[in-house]
Structure formats: structure tokens, C-alpha cells
Length: 321
Ligand code: DGY
Image 1 (cartoon, protein in one colour):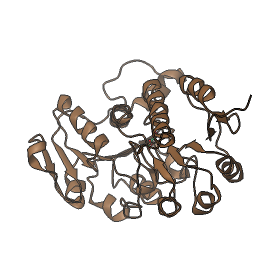
Image 2 (cartoon, helix red, strand yellow):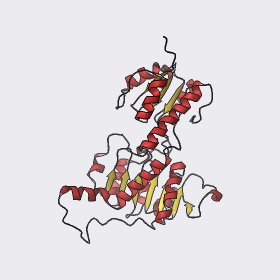
Image 3 (cartoon, protein in one colour):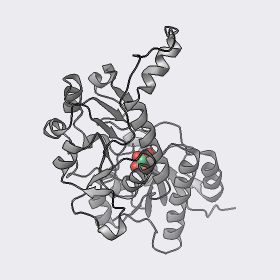
């Protein structure tokens, strides 16, 4: 019997519940691996597919988009979509979708985990206990920075920035935020105050970034911005690595311009700036923002919902362009 199911290209293995749905409902171009495909494998796969799910490590360039003539929809398994040449997709009429909302809580929670781990030296503490060198409680051991009551600076107040701000209530932290325009005050708690970027950097004890990566936000935080921060301040980034100039950050940390940093994302993932790995005042995570079972399954379901809509001739609920 002829298989009439649409052809799907999946660039990476997704969580089991999503794989089960995908295998049942689509003809798979091939069985995906738990590793990034090469550019040529990615291009070949997309060229054979009616619909596709790709991840943030897959760089979908204009050449690939124009070559994939069968492809109707490219569902990006992420909220950020800086990995896709949107102008080329628009030109070619290819629908691109993302996965907003379902990963907001997971990413906001992870931001707080990283913030607390950085300020309270959690990773150093874990290493000390495991080393067998811990000699017991000491009044001066691994003293970190107090978090409760300090000023939280949030750059970017989309869904994730706001979810991070909401979690600050329990820590009694005044929130300063930077967006290009102040948000409508009627929709905001009184404790959230707008600041210019440099005003926020000078005032906050902890600065956390929640912006998309665009040409305007590339290296938004460089040497000049870091020099505006307090020597006791921490920088947290769970958004996109290239928003921070890693070389400038490494210098700022080495010279005491700021106290520490918590990073989940990097300029050249999975490579990291070698100096950052040497510094104890930096906590490094492997891009775990959305990495909960719940969020990763929901992200898959959102991709499938968008694909279904396009195949049924409806508009995709999360089309990004
Ligand atoms: C996203 O969705 O953009 C996240 O970075 C994935 O973890």
C-alpha cells in the first residue's frame, strides 16, 4: 500500500513521547540521531521533506531554504530563531514557527538556579565536599553574596524576563528593567521600574539578560557596559551567548570589574572562551534553559501543532515572520 503520510525531516532525536507521535504520523526522511547533523546532511534532509522540525544548533541558511523546494513549514524547536535566515524564508514563502510560552517557566526557573548558584558559590561547595578535603563548617568558608533584598536588573521584558521578575517577589528584590520603551505602567507591579541600559547596569546587584539575538543585540554587553556595573555585581545570561562579548566578560571578571557570572549560553556553542573555564567566580551550564521533561515535550507538541495547521491549510499559531 502506498504511504500517503507527509514526509518529515527531524534534525535531532526528541523526547520519547514526541518520537512516538512523529513515527506514527509521518514518513521520516531518516531516523534522527542524538547529535547535530552536518550542514550537508541537514540540507539533504530538508530537501526531501514536506515539513521539518529543527533545533537551535541547526543553521538554516538562504541556500538551504531555496534548495528545499518541497518544504512547507520549518518548525524551530526553540523560542529563539536566530538560527534561521528569516528574510530568505519570507522571500521563498516558507513558514517558520517557534515554541513560545511552554518554556517560559523552565527558563525562568533555570535563571534563578544559575543566579543563586553563582552568588552563593554552590558549584565550588559541591566540588569541595566531593574532593574529600572539606574539614567541616567554618565561619569564613565559601562566603558568597546575599541575594535577598538586592536589586535585580532585567534586560528584556518579554515572557521570560517577566517570569524572572515575578520570582523576585519572594526574595524582596526591587526590579529595574530595560526595554527600548518603558512598558505600560498599568500592567506592571509598582516595584518594576524602567531604566536606560547604562542606568540599569550601574544600579543592579544582579543583571540578567532576556533578549532575543538580533543584529541590534549582538555584543550589547561589551567592555563599556561591563565597566558600568558594580564591582560586587553578577551577570547572568540564559538568553543567547553572542549578546555578551565573552572576551570582554573574561577580562572584566579577571580584573575585578564585576564579581561573577552565570552563563547558560555561549558565543560559539559548544565551545566556550577558555578564560571563562578557568575562573571560579563563573558558573557554566550547557544551555539547559528549557531542559525539563515537561517543557521539552510541550515544545515538541507545539511544533506538531504548527505543522498540523499548515498541512490543514490553516495559519500556523506560532509563525514568526
Ligand atoms: C530557546 O528555546 O530558545 C532555548 O534557548 C532552548 O533551550
